[in-house]
Amino acid sequence: MKKFFARLILFALVVMTASTVFAAKATPEQQRAKLNEMSGQVLERMYEKYPSSEAAVRDSYAYCTISASSIKWGFWGDDHGRGVAVNNQTGERIYVKMKEVSLGLNFGAKEYDLLFIIVNKAAWDRFVSGNIKFGSEVSAQASDGVSGETFANATVVANGVWVYQLDKKGLAVEATLKGGRISPFRTLN
Image (cartoon, rainbow, N blue to C red; front, side, top):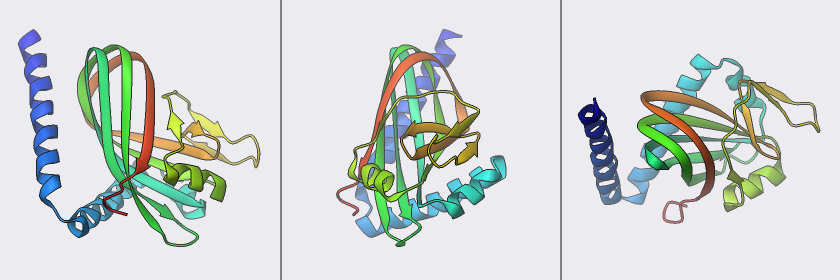
């Protein structure tokens, strides 16, 4: 059993490393096109799993989709992802990257999608400037407590920002403290 999990972790590391190498060879235009395509796929999966997310995206000030992966081993875990933030008011697209570190009891690897709902300009400005830092919480419903807006199956990550998460594949067992950050992809914007 230990060999299986060790091989699973090794495989995940190889896949993540290989995808980084191949992504680095693509031109910025190719990378943006790939992220835009991935964003559409994330939205399709979210709408299927969480039907209310479609109205949340449509009615929001902005949204951001991120496709991410994680590897957890022992007392350390690492999550990273890439995506695109879209301002529904202006049509502006900001390409972003995510990094999350966890400390505690960790084991496994997984791939998952994130859909951030951004409700106002102030939250958008903080989000795309990299000034949103977050920790993981579990919640069945989130409300901003100000405008009364509520998003079923979403979790509050910051003032004016909610997130839906959808696991694609893999398994990770964790009892951890996490901290993460989303920041603009300087080479793509």
